[in-house]
Image 1 (cartoon, rainbow, N blue to C red):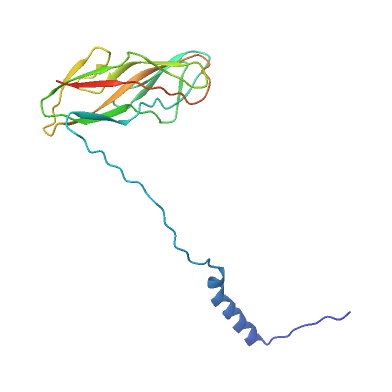
Image 2 (cartoon, rainbow, N blue to C red; image 1 turned 180 degrees about the vertical axis):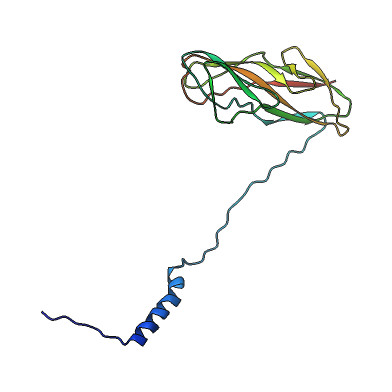
Length: 186
């Protein structure tokens, strides 16, 4: 059996090594390509005497137990619980609405219903005691509550919190529902 050997002088080996190091970055780099991506831009242009939803009421992540309980989101964003409910994480936020009226104009705000039901994979859960973050705070109901727009520009925003009734052994999953706020400019 024969073997074959190639003998290179040390100076040639060094030259080959340097050449290999010089071309390695170009051999390993991928071909340059132009890529593009699209982003989104949004704006809401308000007409006078209008309002819109900025974000939804979110009770955050909760852990039920064998005992029923409640989760409350205050208009200031604080979250509390009663009974067998455990709050998980830092989630949860009040709904927020904004609009444009005129300075010193009176506004009536009311709910479409004093309670709503959110549904998901388990037994539906009731949301009640909707509270508006005004000065002072007030419980919203189907009976209108009167406020005055105090911004010289006529713009305003307000948070709305509420209380969620969580059943004993509530099934895990996402639950959702809707509520209506009616605003009448006087």
